[in-house]
Length: 161
Image (cartoon, rainbow, N blue to C red):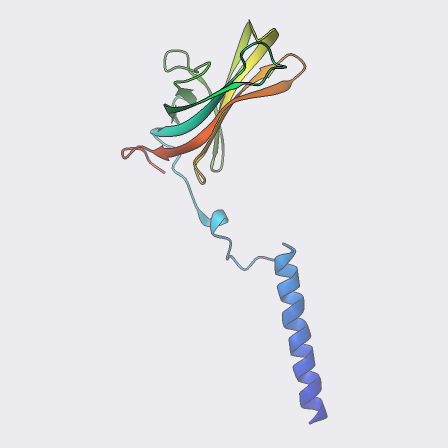
């Protein structure tokens, strides 16, 4: 009877240790669905985004004007480029460079212009294919980010994953 009780306690401690290790991220039993998703990096991926634009009015120190807009965005995996139509658009005529990191698509383009009393050095946007999140920002002097557009996107019916 005592041996049975000791064996039962050892089994309970082993199960609790395994659960604690999984919760701490030390072990994984493949139950993380996010890691098992694969995305197609071929062809053209197009989305339509319901977004909020936060446009500074009188310089960066003032509250921005916020408006809601629908904007299209897309990437061409074969060309390694991307575009979107909106604030400081990285247009289909002047596409940016594409970087793929799993579900995250990042498009960037160097820039040299002044806006809001600051020197703009780059334009960027990301699309998270898993969550649909869209972000667009400018890099201003001093490597500071000025986020302009944020929203959620849905892929068009003809786009791959």
